[in-house]
Length: 423
Ligand code: GLY
Image (tube, rainbow, N blue to C red):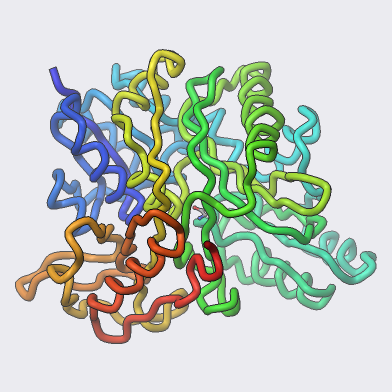
């Protein structure tokens, strides 16, 4: 009997996961709360339910006879959705409230990594703004990252060039409260110079199956300038991750994290996504995400050859080692089309043209979109991720950009350097 599946979110990440789930004969109906115009074509949007509305999500799960919850985004787990749904008999692929602290509290995760021998930049934790300022003023003046401890939609880490930048970051997080209560506590962290990669792993509490490495592009503008965004593009496999580095991350980060969480009585089930920095002396964990990355997921799902539902179902049952997880060797490149002005202010409700002009094997994963009498219109900052595959990253990139140019809406913009320079 096929399983009815619940997802929570509005992103292109959720559309990519629904697209992949739809290929599984083991999946019945898919419900997405609240979803977007892309997910509506493949499942049923529960458009009145927001990701933090846990009571409504639990009620909807009962009403729609949900058998399985697949956690994709960060918001619901720290509020206990997995615990609540599990108590209702819904099988869940996602971390419990306790395990989700790995992402929800950077103070927790820093303490955890230091205690379990997982390499991470050193940091001090502050809840008092003035004390944090005094600490910054005592520092030599360069190499600082200021982070909101709580969940800030992937935007709560501010990389600073000098002490003045760090004081401004403290003001943004602790005084202006740009990230709300996520800024009740801050970490002032040593800044490492190197290159970043996103590590993703399916986890069943004790065992991990690594996904291919990927990387995202966080800033709004080409050359990594401009404001931090939710992600303007991604590609996979990440250049420079060789087998030795991949093994080090698997053994010394992912497996050590699972063993540590189990030892602390908070076994981690779900997708673990450590954001890695690789300076000359090897990999460090910058932060944990307890979910799928966005836009990394948009380039990972098209590379997954196995049945996503089978993998997540096995992981939820603690039996990840019973399934095969196969990936295509073909790289994928994803380019985000965004509304002019994003991530600051932007206008919405512009008709989107050209989606029917894409090559048949190129994917358009929707994020800020909705349907209205004019067709599909913009409904958010990041609107679409256009994903193409190829025999090389360069070929996938050329195809992605060739297709990006066919999709138009008023004020649209995209970065032109996603995966640039990768062979
Ligand atoms: N792409 C980074 C994130 O999902 O947080």
